[in-house]
Length: 114
Length: 114
Image 1 (cartoon, rainbow over the protein chains, first blue to last red):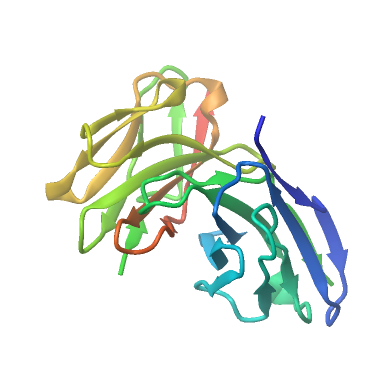
Image 2: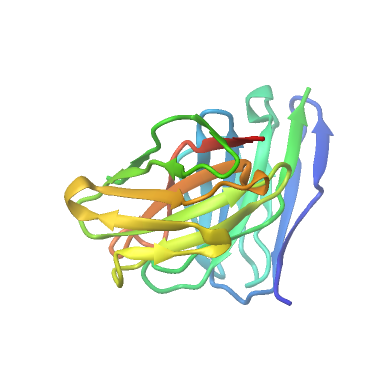
């Protein structure tokens, strides 16, 4: 069965360190998304990609970057981790074609920045 | 710009009682609307979606939602709550001419009392 996986599931890091969160999907979807989930804010979009070599900033992109070198993967990098980036991070993917397709979510990565 | 509001960050119902979770959206063009459920320590799972076909949409686990354009609402209902329905519920909106991104509401936590 197709799926979307994230690794690691839990990560503790120190302020100032670079951190990369992995996202891998086997749906063969063109669209991939990264969100952060914080209490009271729901899910907020960090970055998204509509295909290989395409990346775009979302609502809360400061301090984060992504790259898309193949269809399956969209790693999220925190260039210099800050305590404000302590959160649960979700990756999602969807088919391309106008917004009517649901997004499929990974299990999430809980990141703690100390 | 799109936005989603969910009235009530926390809703409690008794087992067997009606579940009603509210979602209102703002959108300048006809929207696509989604309800997702999140169980503890898991990713989001699609419950149902509205994509301009029937205004009453049936989903998984006995949930349904009705799109009401005049009220800009997409409320989620279930006739009889079960203990297993206890979870966080998110409403999301997308638009055909807004790329393929979602805007999520802040979520409603549903508690089911025995």
